[in-house]
Image (cartoon, rainbow, N blue to C red):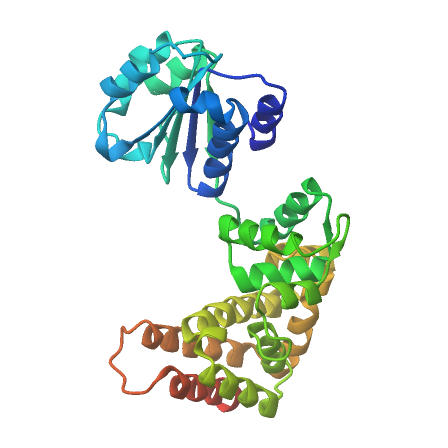
Amino acid sequence: MTFEEIKRELKAKQHRPIYLLQGEETFFIDRLALAIENGVLTDAEKEFNFTVMYGKDTDAETIASTARRYPMMAPYQIVVVREAQLLTDIEKLEKYAQNPMPTTLLVLAYKGKTIRSNSKLAKAIAHSNGVIFDAKKYYENQIPGWIQKYLQAHQYAIQPDAAAMLVEYLGNDLGHIANELDKMMLNLPLNATVTRQHIIDNIGINKEYNIFELQEALANKQSLRVFKMVDYFTANPKAGPLVMLTGTLFRFFSKLYIYHHVLKQPEAQVLKHMGLTSAWALKDYKAAVKNFPLPKARQVLEVLYQFDLKAKGYESVGGQDGELMKEMMVKILYGSA
């Protein structure tokens, strides 16, 4: 089942005896577990009918014994096993899964891993009308679309460039992105369309000095503007940590490297090869391709790799992040190729 299908069932008060929520994208696992925890029982019913267990502290026999209890003054009891991937004997739940209690909702939050679909436990869950949900990690180019759907579900919209900005700034952690969107929606009227300015105002991005502005300045080889931002980041380390800068710029120049090889193709193919979702996102690459020929783009990637190692302490260097940042920008802007 998909995330949306499970949510629709829960909203319709259709419940399954076992929910195996597994996979790499923990955001979906957490949200589904929370929807079950908060959408089935009232607060009063939870007092006697809601149990949380942890995989590292329990075993299959204890889980099965707890799940076989009858609810008290409620239609269901909920048993949630967090960190179920740490259960050393999870396959022993097969016996319970073959004949689960119809008045129990057993939720197994199995993060970072998956149970083989042909395993006895998985087959038993499927045959007993249980749910097996695989939370697959999103690729970076899928996240703007997910952001759009997330906001639509809350009756908001977002401009494509604003969605791209969120991904560049927050990365691919859906939980972190959702938390920031939730906070931002508190400050916006219903049915509003989220813009870059909303993100700048609500997610702590300085209007003039942020990673996106630095990326644009580099793409256009605006040296004075670049070093003004470096001075700002040096004075305000949390605004632009060196590790974040190297990571973001490495992604940018990696895509620029691809752009050099595909720029003569139709725009739709270019976007596909680069993992971009809108033509707007090509703006900086169109500027950078003129200022960073292919050999230079390759050299910049090497520079960023070296400084990423330094930022993470893999090479013994005496300079602070600010000094390393300045040295890195000099090599990016003026290094020969």
